[in-house]
Image 1 (tube, rainbow, N blue to C red):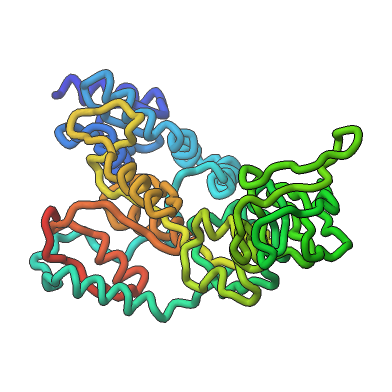
Image 2: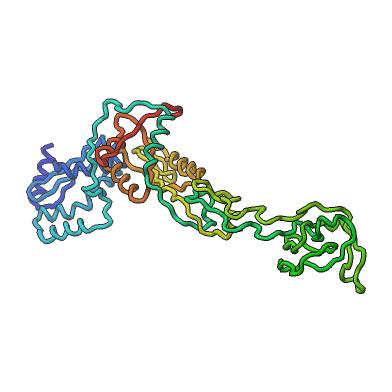
Length: 411
């Protein structure tokens, strides 16, 4: 011990600025211990010390080479400024402070975001256990007074969205009667017998100008407009040709072998959608069949309710990202992945808001950042004496805890 003291005294006289041995400088000790504990829990067994004698700084580091490297990495950024203070280099000290304050890349929690919660065990639970049904009622009641916001989206992006208004058909679909088969348009009242073929329906789906008369028939294809005066379509298999033109290119007369029924094989006006009918109801989930009808009506922009933005935060010192190498005492964050994909099953996209350490400052900072871009926050953490989440919510954000514990299994 005397030998160490003599050596140190000798070095002091040599005006050495830094000696890595022993002393007492609480701020550096605190920095080394708290930072090391985040990396390795065994750091609590080491006793780093530091101090000052005259213009010499003395720092004692742990014995392990790994921990020496770790602790030195923590204090190395502060050493130049500390030495400038010791040697009274005032100009350098001022510029050093300015550089620290302007360093936008520093990962330091701002003073304004520090939590009011003190690290002390919660001795008892102050929240009663309630039934799941009651919890559901409370959630619905709390959310019912929230303002509903809407947005207009293209129909291609509206699948499974919730309609924010009623939509009625502005026209009938189809807007004109069409044939549902290939055959002959006739008057059903003529029954069966010979018909004179007067015309052939055009391929452009333009209605025939002439009105069909009694005893006449018009050749028609599926989907084409029904000629005026016709009220039935006879399929080809129920007819036979009686007479062709001289060159054999056209049918002159045809026999109707079976008496048709009124509107047989005709898709009447409004058979799919009638004018002014309710196509999409407010509050209804938009499905594929609704989108098909909307497309027929030419509705491409749809007013829907905005989906809430959901953020998920995991809280715990023992949690690490799935991609990280698993260290002793750590578990991978599987719950967050489960939540994100569960929400997708209900057509919601969730934001990964990271992992917060289990201390009030980290929890408060994580919540502050998440509140800026999310409507709903889901947290994943343990309950116990040192559960900080509810205390941070109440003390730092003046939040109201409507319920905390639910009577359910698993849970």
